[in-house]
Amino acid sequence: MTLSIAPAAATARANEAAAFEKVLVLLAAAHRGGEAARAQALRMNDKLWTAILQAVGNAESALALPMRQGLAALGVSVLREQGRAQPNLDLLIAINQRVLAGLATRH
Image 1 (cartoon, one colour):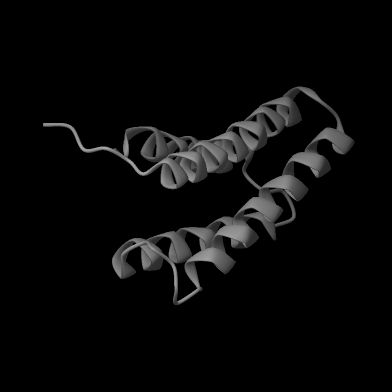
Image 2 (cartoon, rainbow, N blue to C red; image 1 turned 180 degrees about the vertical axis):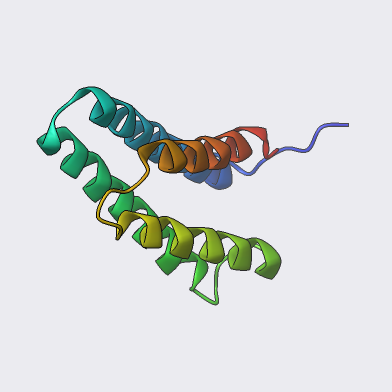
């Protein structure tokens, strides 16, 4: 038996996945690029995770509380890493890849 996803939920998940994909491209390019590419990638990653923290902090979120709490903890860790003098791009890429994989497998 397969579970169907409501069209709105499927669209939201696709939009979330697209945002992670875009940031992942920028983070990968930051390895090859200069300081401007790095700054752009980190700025976009910050925007993405700030939006996630705002969304999971909303009491009206459709996500279950344990999922919201987990994403909040992860988001705080990501933003803390980004606050370092030299953020670990490989770590940020790995985290974003895991979240993207989770979005792809949720049915």
